[in-house]
Image 1 (tube, rainbow, N blue to C red):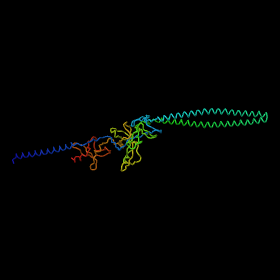
Image 2: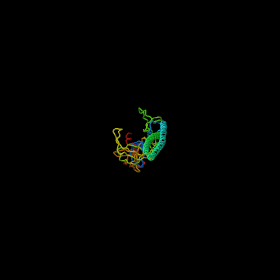
Image 3: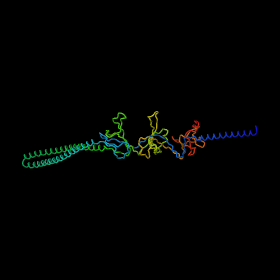
Length: 418
């Protein structure tokens, strides 16, 4: 082969090699760009105070609630009632009962009282007349005795016989005086007995009138406190739960029964169950973040105000569980809150200042050590981190900078699937 042929072959081979190398480099670059362009769900590591919490579920209830009881009055019938589920102020009328029957009874009792008072006044007047008559008769009897004594003295001066007759007359007048004194004493006892009897009748009539007036005054119930009015359901005559209906105008109720309650909305608190393993980390006055299911946009600040001293056994699920009850009082209740609403509370047990936090699902384990997948120019690389604290939704870590982009999925497993 000539020298020219060798040069042509050399340069041809060189060009082919260069083309192959450049094609391989372009393939590698393109592969790396494709890998870097793969989209994964990501999150930013943020730096802020990290709140270590214990999360539990609970239900709103009012720490202060006043029950509504019907008065001790027979034959109660509802004539008017305020709508259930409304806010009422202290002193507002919430329910009125039909008082027509009591008004009729009051008229009868007042008539009996007037009659008893008239009989008493009549007897007092008659007694005064009798007393005056008795005084007059007693004076006459005493005068007759004194006159008989003078007559005895005068007759003894005339003769023995006239003196003896005068003594007999003196004895008779003296006996009449004793009879008159006994009669006066009898009249006094009879008058006292009759007066006491009529007074008792009058007092009984007066007591009946006062009792009837008291019953009439109880026919209107007013709100004892400011709060949320809630009436119970009417189970009277219900054969099944479908027959249970709210109380309405015209319903008959018994005396002394519970019609409902008025919870004070300023004393709302969330009560929840605490696991035995978390009980030792909870203390009174700890901060609590309350969230209500029906108001997801609302975040409420609260304080732990009560923890049950003993664990309670729950028989509603099997196997039986033991838990403690804790309640947190809401510091600034929202007007939309109502007792019975479900929600959750995050009890803050400690704070880590300026901690790096990431979502809990962004933390993975490789070779028994916690890692995160940190985004870079050439894709995601695993970075070992140290866990400072854990919450149900987020984790405080150290080992990466604030603002770093991390993957929310296991990148290596995703790549293997591809």
